[in-house]
Length: 284
View (cartoon, helix red, strand yellow):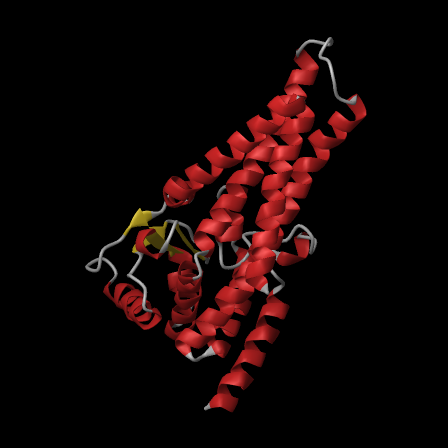
């Protein structure tokens, strides 16, 4: 059901890009430009999503010699998940967080901050790594990158249209000016809402993947609670466009409405993990 929901949301996001191109540029030409933009943004996401996300957080590659325990943890969990070991990166930030990126399991990367390595005990850090590997195995990393890139293209197009209306020709034919203004302001908001909805859906799936991989859902539940508390004390910076990639919101949850939250509430995630724990115990 969540896979279908994600596909539907991505389809709506691409349709929104085409629609705003039609409205702002006009006619068939605008629709064609919208299709072209959708194709280009998806292509860019496919080939460069990992590099863009890692650069946004200034992540640096780390070797086995530099972090042997962390490296072995990622290797062990990757083998258990039956996926290639992703490249490992460290983000030079005291904020406690982690994310995964890459177009598929063969071209994936997992990044952790210095803060999360210092904050979490071993079992909780393992659960967080398993969560990120769940994103990799489910190919959420590509899904989220495409959503972020298409949403960014919609916002850019709306901004360019705004500049065009301010400084361009007043003799532009076609289009309802009120409709154009509404499209300029509402389309980026709608794109963000859809992007965040996709992110929330995928977080539940990755939490469940972590629970199955480690057999310890409660460890991730504790980690999420600890990370949320840490985010209030040391918020993580970086480009907001990539916030959906993080395991926990970079901003404290109470400052975000449900509609514009990049993640489900920590309370909902913890409750879901505890239900999974009961299911795992029942199967044992």
